[in-house]
Length: 300
Length: 321
Image (cartoon, rainbow over all chains, first blue to last red; front, side):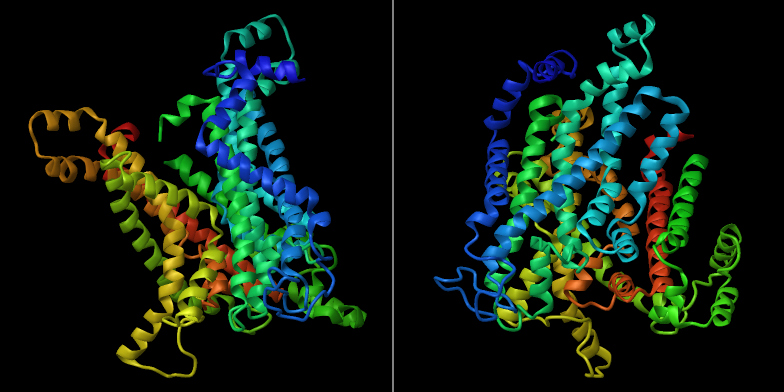
């Protein structure tokens, strides 16, 4: 698997990056964008993985007086029902990241399938699928999410499905144009002439060819789905059972964090964490794009 | 052009159909929306009467046809909560949202164009780097959180502006005092919205300016000895503004529904806030009406962009004609 995807990068992506995955990784780390992005992501992934072990308290339990100010016992104070805010945020990292990650993964699977099929088959199929993409891109985003959440109810599963159903369209379009390029390469036409089935060519040539683009699109989709999840959770449409960073901000807003002056430790930290995650994914995604497709960079 | 019209019709049909089928795709009977939680206690004949009165006993296709027909007459139904026509409620809220998002759109376009042009003009200068970095950062910050931070700083810490709403409640201000009161309430939400939409316009303007500055006619003008000021105003600025017009037109479409989250932060009585309240109260007719209105406004923005762009850029006109 690893070796085949390396050869994909060297031989099929266009323009070919010099030296495959390894050099793509070092290119990624050679820019300040890439380094900052990866560092932010590693930090947050650590919080997500180790959360329950490094959180000072059980985030769901009442471990202090309500509205405690920061102290040695509670570094970020407590919320309206006496839960430790620092622990909430550490444990919430996993919720925010996993919803964003899963929604992005699902969106990329849909987007890759649609993009590859549209780009490879062309004709009527292409037109129909791209029309669908246009429709999804025009529909109002947050309002539609609210409508969906109202009808289907707020749970992590529904959130993931709703977010991914709305963000697959952009990657689908990008992946389609990449698939179009691959279809016209001589060896694909050769394989077709030799009688290889469409399915075979899709699986063996087109799919591996669009993989690098799909990876960078996935990272960028993760960035936007984390932002969307946070907005929905802030509106009170998050999963009531699993508190994400956005949910913490929702409670801060409705339980008067501004009136009692607890906003410096109740409102500021979750927003910083969300921004760090979004920034981490966005920078990493851009850096990967630049490393794999240097030509894109010349535009800016 | 005809193809575009077909495309917009498809989007409209998609939105109308979503509005129709989503409530019906929900688990449980649609009666629950009408009769509330007591539906189980309803006697059989009452249930039947309710079904007949609402047309829910007819086949889905007939219901869909009737739904579309009443939409065409401008009948958006009655709100469950307020017991008022949905259309009336939408029209009441619309001006507030237009005021909020319209001011933000104007400000972000003006600043985006100025800063984008300057950044490109002095490419790789300190302003270019500073603005590029800030636009990356601004894109990463959740809009509602930015709003909350502004409230924390400029309404709580230093109480310069009101915390929420669009008017001071029960003040019954009139005339100039009322205008000033509304303006003071607008400052923080408008600043928030302007900041979050600034980077889009800025990046488009900067990129357009960079490409224009690389064009032959700019080089020729400079070679002829035209002053830098003249190059900037006469040649570069005007041509680089084209793509910004498109962005502006598309943003016009988001005027109606673009501020749901910000209106929530500031408890601003706009349409976005109403859409959200309708969802929370399970007020389905109101929710559907608001969603439809938002979709139509986006379509209108797209159509406007399609129509106006060829007028501005002769090259597009030639290609299409």
